[in-house]
Amino acid sequence: MKKAIILAIGNELVEGIIVDTNSKYIANKLLDFGYKTLMTKTLPDNLNLIVDEFKDSLKKADLVITTGGLGPTEDDLTREAISLALEKKLIYDSALGEKIIKKAKEYYKKVPEIVKKQAYVIEGAQVIENPVGTAPGQVIKIKDKTVIILPGPPAELYPIFESALEKLEKDEPLYTRRIKTIGIPEAVLVDEYKNIIYSNKDITVATMASYKTGVELRFTGKISLKDEIDTIVNKLIEKISDFVYSLDDKDIEEVIFEKLNSLGKTVSFAESCTGGLSSSRFVDVPGVSKVFKGSVVAYSNEIKERVLNVKKETLNNFGAVSEECVIEMAKGVANLFSTDYSVSISGIAGPTGGTKEKPVGTVWICAYDRNSDKYITEKHIFKGNRETIRFKSSLYAFNLLRRIII
Picture 1 (tube, rainbow, N blue to C red):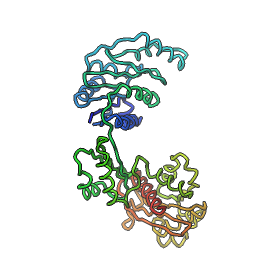
Picture 2: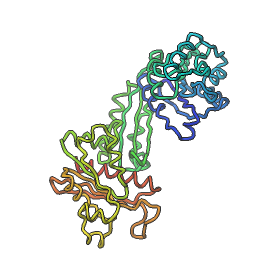
Picture 3: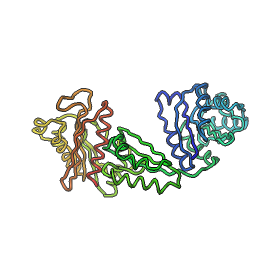
Picture 4: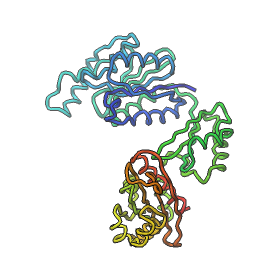
């Protein structure tokens, strides 16, 4: 199995101004070519650091890919760093320079001289022209290893990388299966089912826990191990089926949408502590208007009463964070929007507002089937800060909705 390392370069990445989405895209594409990504690293625009990390990566991997740092400004140092690391010259390609200037004129009335910097090519590299922007990519072969240098903007990186893949020596493709779960802690999942999960040493296992998406298990191996991977996944699903919500890359919101859409059913939300977070996540799914009628953010007791028809006696006797309240919220919003299903959330996201009886993180959720007048409720005491509690509340609400639908 060939190994790859991805170096994402740019101060804006290190400082968290821009999120690195390129590395995930590249790593997924490489699986089809038989390359397992050993690691991805984010580096600042620092010449010496890039040189050192590149040298180290080239020792460990068959393929090193860099993204970013190919622009015309002084802090764009990727070309310079790699030429130093490989002890190869940077050569100005005049024909390429003319093409870059011509393209730059499409964007600027006056083309600055610094754009020519992008026409410097590392000795022995093959240039891959940029169909979108001005910074070209480069592919360098060093004995049995390959280096691919890509620009940072995704719109430019994607087409250049697709062209670079055609020049890559293909190994046996890799096969990957995913299991996405909600409601079973990562440590419990791995400990209780380790004999199944780690039953084949030739299959790479990755576990990922997120308060936004739950716990994911990923099994990867050569395509020749497909049957073995499928067997492991199927055995595991038999044991944990109640917790599994997806067997591919889909998030819980997409799973809910597809299920409702296939049934021709509709849904509405009543949110308190999540403040519309669940609705926002749901409308990120393309086509969701086919199933989603709307939501009510009932943050105050007044709105719970007046809009969702929660009884004053319920609020006085049990409080807003109670099973009784979320049941009435779920029924109220389903009746308000005339939807087949609904989900309601009410809790204490903190950092203040908790009591001994109802500490910060206490959340009640209800999923309601209006057609059969049946509901499911859950109480959770989530740990973490305000954001974590709100996202966990939303995640578990979607999962409760999934359970009542199926």
